[in-house]
Length: 101
Image (tube, rainbow, N blue to C red):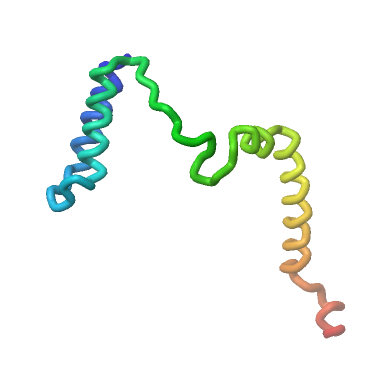
């Protein structure tokens, strides 16, 4: 398992070269360093999360609520309403409606 992950990592390194002009701040070099460290520490390496949120600022509980089946069903219903409005707005007009304008 670890061997296949390491091979995939090496393949990524081939495709993502280190930019020598960005010494100390190159993402490729940083990723190589962190992955090598993780492989040295073993398969069960876990990094502590600095915060309980993600890039969006939402918490785990908020994500669970948003991604719940009930919420997704509500969004589908809202989308249906929007879709119907768009269909009506852009539907071709009949000859009787052209005379009204």
